[in-house]
Amino acid sequence: MSRFTPRDLDRKVYEAVFTEGPEKEKRLLELKGFAKELGARLASIYPLYREMAQKFLGFTVPAINIRGMTYDVARTLFQVAKELKVGALIIEIARSEMGYTKQRPLEYATVILCAAAREEFPGPVFIQGDHFQANRKAYLANPEAEKKNLKNLIREALAAEFYNLDLDASTLVDLSQKTLEEQQRPNYELTAELAAYVRSLEPEGVTVNLGGEIGEIGGHNSRPEELRAFMDGFNRCFTEKVGLSKISVQTGSSHGGIVLPDGSVAKVQIDFETLKLLSEIARREYGMAGAVQHGASTLPEEYFGIFPEVGCAEIHLATGFQNIIFDHPALPKDFRQKIYQYLKENLRNEWKEGQSEAQFIYRTRKKAFGIFKKEWWDLPEKAKKPILETLGETFAKIFKALKVTETLDMVKHIIA
Image 1: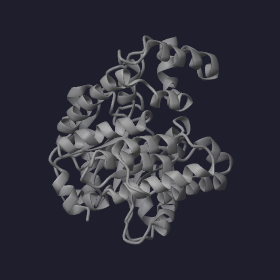
Image 2: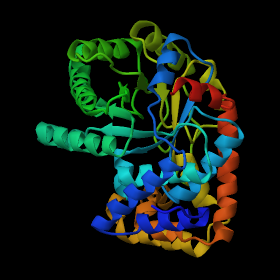
Image 3: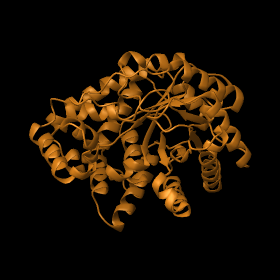
């Protein structure tokens, strides 16, 4: 590919994202290759987590899901990370998000990497497959078909250079069983099978960073006995050299937050003592970096500084940034109303009994990132700029609270 200006790169990313058919993959691959020529590189965060397993390094790694306006938001993220010298940073997308935001792995990895190249971000870029989750209903109906779906997704993600994957079979935990070991068995057996599949596909010289999960987020708080039941079972089933680097637990949060009838998000209590204990057990007994906190972006701002204090290895952040975008005064009112009207007319079957209109919209508006994908990317600069500025300010606050500023040089040293 011939060299071109930064503005040319912006245009070519846009054209590749909105190209249809076989030509799209070709354009994305060319762009990803060009971003690498400019110095951007995708990597596994495993070497850093291996260090964290030996000794907690004093910071909590943010894993940020970008659902819409991906190139612009990623550029803003890298601008802030570069300014604050943040190296310990993951950008991720979940299995479900790939569907409703219309972002397959190759597109997502390419857009993120091009954003890093555009901002001349000097560190490695960690892209993560978040919640590569077993669908409980599909799995119970046809286990082999659902396993095949998950393995196909893993293969697609690895081909796109997602070198960090969270395997989530916690949806299969069977609470009807009498013992914790039997409750966790479907979870650890499938997680071990998928982890082995990842190891069979990872490219030479790369150790994919893998996570597991012991409790469905939004359920009851995890306990040490559950962690041990899962990890002991996993270790019996898993025969490869490198297993899991982290474990996702439930400590009181909920994906998207708990929405009140007026559409606001209720303040929740995080069980930080449990999070601290589970992180310590994960490190001391199982050689992992620690525990992972999901559903954190809608938590009160004062909570973020506590995560490094309790030794939390990683936190996942998504809906809070989505809320900034949707609720920002700079977002054109007619566009917001167009989205909400569409949701009420076309997703009415998802309007649960007892939900207020505000609750329904809050729960479903994430799907508008895919339905109106091109219109989000086409927002006028006078709308985008203030939204991105607010996002940038939020990223900076979170980075400082999680103590990941000034981690760039260390990460560059550890991640060869």
